[in-house]
Length: 250
Image (tube, rainbow, N blue to C red; front, side, top):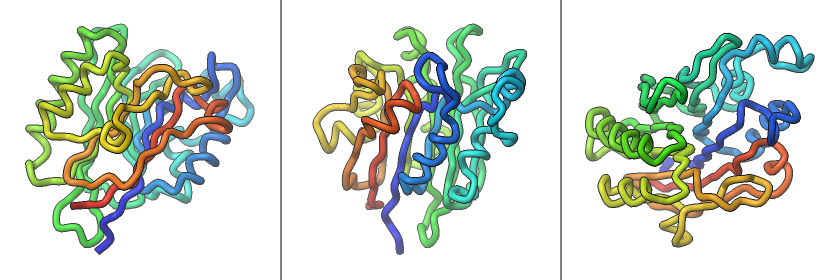
């Protein structure tokens, strides 16, 4: 029975570099494929953008989540969060394993900042019960994040059996680490960097990470290692640095 999983989370900044200077989605796909992750939790994924498709000659025909998943992750789920005249973007989970079911939940704090919580149940070969995965992107204000953490806790209680393995990953925008205390103390989850290195990781800006915005929380796993992917090519691809971890089912 294979118990080891490699996980990564990344705010891909809609496939553009810092300040939207360069389209980086092709370099992004190559770099993500090189990580060898079994599951990818992605934020700020473009499902469609008519203007970009017209102004960039190498713009992918497929939605970004399909383009990135090609030949590596046969299963994917996309939660559309922000919808505008040119298109839409949201969160995505890419998986090497079958996604049994998924749903997307609106946790927007106000109409000017659309946010979502994407939940998947994933069938891992020879595991007794499905793995539950939640990809999330929280708001910029602390007041909104408090409500979104409460919404996340409620969804975990509603959707995830107590004995089921669980991974919650994404961009928490939580530089004050207030959500961190609630997530760990309130739900018996472990953050992979706090567990292995004593503090959650610095991920923003990717060129010189100063702020601890991105997280990977787990339940039902031992954490073998955790890494922040800094330097090139990552510092040129997005304004966030990606995180990865290797987990072993208890």
